Length: 224
Image (cartoon, rainbow, N blue to C red):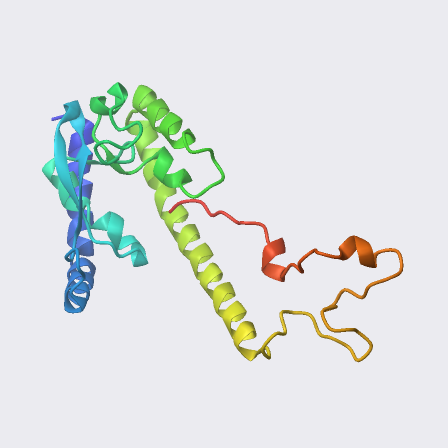
């Protein structure tokens, strides 16, 4: 048995034993809600030597249970702890020849960089580079980076949720029609925060006011 497969079997089994109580609890709570698609999400992916298998995932991102729920595939040998991100059959790039040389992984270069400002095809290049240069040293380095990346991503998601809640509270407390601009007694109707002048009034005519949200740049976070 190859060292990589030994690591997958030993570490994958240990992680599955540790995560089993949390996975069972999350699955039971999800079953109570009776989701239309069932407790587990299923999709057909291509694995080692082009063999396809049904990837089962618990769609609960809290504590990264979605990734941990794939550990049975690692123990069975369908996936690896480290490898290219699994792609559904028929997805762009899923039939690349280099993907058939290794097992898809729970973590890897593409998974650790997901959610950044990379172009769409950049994760494919990262995965291809991994396949061409993979080894136990690279696997160990990626495994060591994974916990910090997951914790950092969770912290950014919590911060984003707090910002959304603050925006909702501000919106709920604003009077109707007060979109961040307060009219004064000297302002004519329609001049919400933009008083017209003799030189600039005509230039502004026909332009809609922009809210604060329109000026915000879209932000991206790494490690999803």
